[in-house]
Amino acid sequence: MSAYTNSETDQAAAASLCQPLSTDRQLFTYSMTGIAFGLSGLALLPLLSILWEIMSRGLSGFRLEMLFRPLIENGFANAILGTILMVGIGALLSIPVGVMTGIFLAEFSQTNPLTRYVRFITSILTGVPSIVVGIFAYGVIVLLTKGFSAIAGGFALAVIMLPVIVLTTEEALKLIPVPQRLASAALGGTRFQTTFRVIVSSAIPGITTGISLAIARASGETAPLLFTALFSQNWSDGLLSPTASLPVLIFNLYNNPDPAVNQLVWTTSIILLTLVLFFSLLSRVIAKKR
Image 1 (spheres, one colour):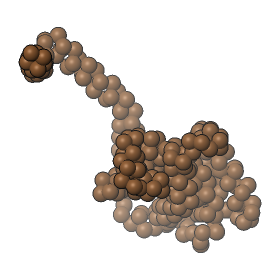
Image 2 (cartoon, helix red, strand yellow):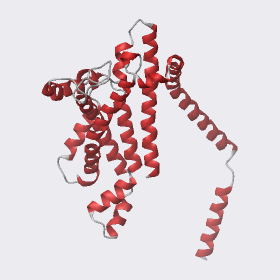
Image 3 (tube, one colour):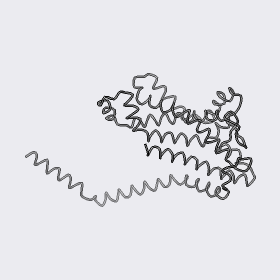
Image 4 (cartoon, one colour):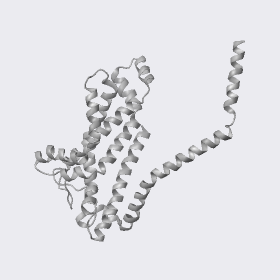
């Protein structure tokens, strides 16, 4: 009798789920969906207006040879190379430290009293103005080496990237369900194997997203590079010499009254946006293949 009653209840529940929504509920659903799309469109308007302004002003002055000439020859190839170089140095310094710190905070620090302080300091670093980071890098690297350099600029960008990578890595690892950890332990996996072969492997897309956000932020920073890498109108002589970058080029030339120079600024802005977009798409491709 009980089984028959349960069967009838299940059938009634299934029938109610298959019934279409009432008119009021459909109207409410469509209204909320429309409001959500409308508000999303309003939020995108400032971004789209900025992109339109940059594209409309910069594309007219773009010429292919600019990609192969330094600023002294009315190009920005040295700034592109310098930006990639310093962001690469910053990534090499910050990604290993940031990912390992995030893993420590998420997986190995439950009983460690230092965890709270590390997380607190990391959170503070995310809000430190970039110009303060530039002054710090100036005191640590520039004064020590007696000169502005790409290494100093890369170090400053690494300090900016580090807290973003740490916090996003920690949050990505926390999103992995606990049953995956328990399943690995049940199959005989050690703590180390569970963390790096199961948890970190599953969190690769989230970690990669955090890294791409950090790289995108570092690629557009200007203030730290003014105190560390300075600028050069020609090709850099090495890692220990002043190095050009796209953000500093835009900063230096924006107020120039010469129309040709002003046109170069807008064209350089397109290259900077393209570079940031490339890094973001590359990280997405790597995470998808993984």
